[in-house]
Length: 292
Length: 132
Image 1 (tube, each protein chain N blue to C red):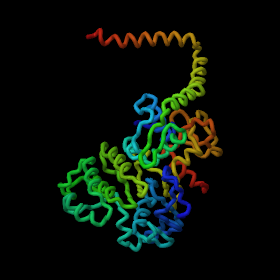
Image 2 (tube, chains in turn green, brown; image 1 turned 180 degrees about the vertical axis):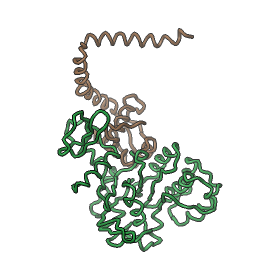
Image 3 (cartoon, rainbow over the protein chains, first blue to last red; image 1 turned 180 degrees about the horizontal axis):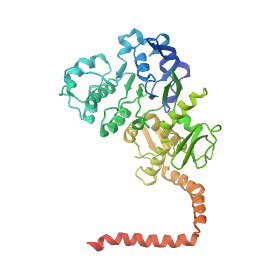
Image 4 (cartoon, one colour; image 1 turned 90 degrees about the vertical axis):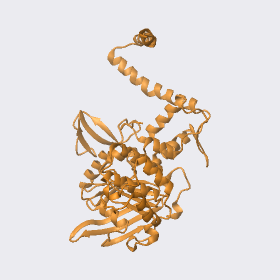
């Protein structure tokens, strides 16, 4: 992989170094199989969006790659290490923000003193700036905060930790309306070409323009891992007023005033690009037919 | 900035930048916000801004000075003006003619409208002063 790195500093996506690699993963909860032959590569310098239906295994996947769950089959590598070994060198480069979590009975400022030393690249100035933007009172006890406030403390902490991998599981759940906007701004400002963010979410509209590439988890495996742009370059959505031939079109959806049809893009296409919700529906819908 | 779903985000950002250049908010040869600052302002993925900046750099309306940052080209405004005029003549004007045919409007009708529009604009400008 190393020799494939292109020296074009304008295009982060061309720096193909892989930070997380999952090969032929099998995982079960007891007798209930979840992942079968799952493969996934994640490359540096991107904000990935992890999408999937309820129960698809988004949180499980994130826990596997951060060493919190152990796989039955296959091989996982994060920053060149096996996450199941939980080495300090790896754990100091991964921050994981769970969807729900208990926080200790201490003030935000005390939490910072206890936890920040685990992350060698922790930036205290950034942390202070994020807290100010999120309007967090660090002298308040964490266990007395609302879910949204707790989330903002840990988000600020995770972003300021400057870890190579930052995992956010449903980060905008519990955030109020102004905080969602601040979230997008802070994530954009904390992103660098050396970091990789993996954000799992159902709230695609909160992050429509933030997450790209998109990973779609469905039926025990990764059925899509690509940029939205690469799909928009190939396909467009056209609104038609006559009912389309369902066997011919890739995807159709009944909407107000007609049908949305996915067509291959031609030079004079003036259809619209896929939004994330439609992209998700198209990919999941098409995977049912066994084609990809 | 409000994005629509009609075209990819990176192209919408390009249009936004063209507007900034055309309206002289960004002057020729001036330094423009970094990728990160633009991403924060627009609340988008920094890689999307990189894509837009690369596109405009290829076109020649932006320049990247290594280690310093991005600048508008010295002839950015005239380039964008040329590009937008071309698009108007090739795409928007033919569409306008089609609509005019449909509605039975001639160029003379439009000229009348243009005169009246100018008059109305003048009236509108005068009005607030009359009220005082």
